[in-house]
Image (cartoon, rainbow, N blue to C red; front, side):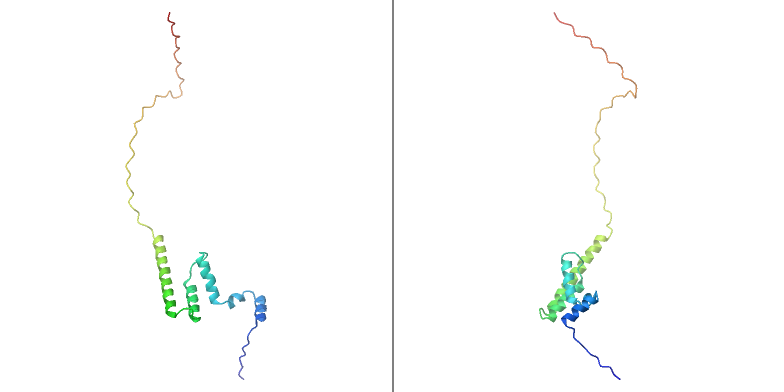
Length: 139
């Protein structure tokens, strides 16, 4: 006996109750276009990395809805691929160890001529100062 496949459509209330009963089903049922929109917005805000798959999904959506031609979509996607490739190459160049550059030779600073230091007593007491005689008065 062959089984007949029955297809039923879910109404709005049935979908809502299904989403409440099965947490996480919203991500499964979510449109890839909606995901692409969210991801592109986050990439534009630099919250996440840009993903070509998101751009591709948005461009396919625009072609399906006759918002742009397939040729224009391909040109935009090729441009995005080229930009992503260029950025990746620049990032690799930045990560490569750079060759050590020859250090610039600076002239040595001129030696300052210092006055010879006074001999120290190395802990010996200083000699007493000579007594000064009072000046004589003139008459």
